[in-house]
Length: 251
Image (tube, rainbow, N blue to C red; front, side, top):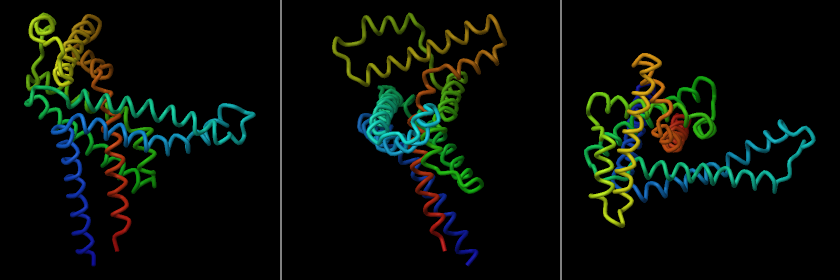
């Protein structure tokens, strides 16, 4: 029986890795559909969890509101879930939409590693502290996963895997190469190049007041790439919840 359980656990772990790879492939292959699905999942998950959180949180801030009305909880929860869903959808779109296939491949790899780290962390918290994967993933996981993704992209850029375009080259493309009505992929590619140029500028600026190592750390923390953590957190929570459900159902 013990050997059979080990085998089942191994299969579940393999399925987890396969699910992570499938999500990254989905984003790489169909960025627009992926962005829409991400926004939809974020909204449905947020609508359920935000209302649960607000039912407990509103009385904490407002002493006279011992039992907040359902309409107030639903309205505030709807607004917050919508805002986070839109942010996650836009972050997903600008993460995977583009025209440079080689860059997008590396981005997908970093995204998959980030997502797997989040799913593994949620599983560990669930096993050791009985944490609820959905709640931890939605409310607590986005910032650290965003930092992890940003660090991965920064490392690839530092080692020359992801090329950096100068401001002059970006200006040339904007004026002479970008069509009058650019596609979303073309705009996203230009936006990524602008992000990289801005990140390099920030690191260069910070080097004047601190060491290069600390400048790069701060650059990772304030990069726009951190927003991708909202995307990774949604899927990490989904995968972790499914995996934990499968593990708890083992004989």
